[in-house]
Image 1 (cartoon, rainbow, N blue to C red):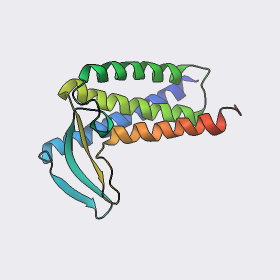
Image 2: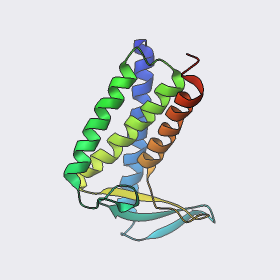
Image 3: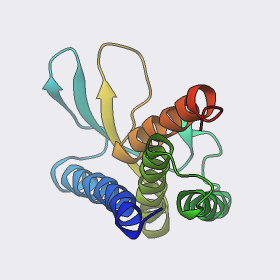
Image 4: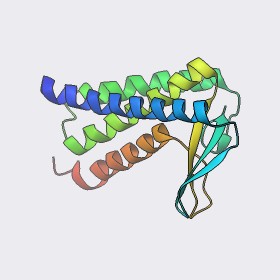
Length: 154
């Protein structure tokens, strides 16, 4: 992979981290825990929560576990992202999104000992999440699309 492409994927990761941290800062500055504000009626609201667990608040309070998982995941993603064996744009974009998301939530865990969540989908019953969570989810979907439909053809 060329240096320019490596830089592009790092920029994608950095943009996820910046967007995630900026929105989290906005929420903390302008909301009290539990406050809710409709953004798009019937679609999206901001609801400020502090999550000291993982998805669905599983393993609540297990920060050491989350630190270890985050460090391991960051190492694996960076290895795959910069390994010349893996050189597909879809795959690398997915990894860049995952990397940015992991780091965005890791910053919260290190600094606050919990993750700030705020995005609430009003049209379905779903957990409140953040930009980092969204980037991880979209990134994993892109990686799976690559692995299922494209990798055999490369």
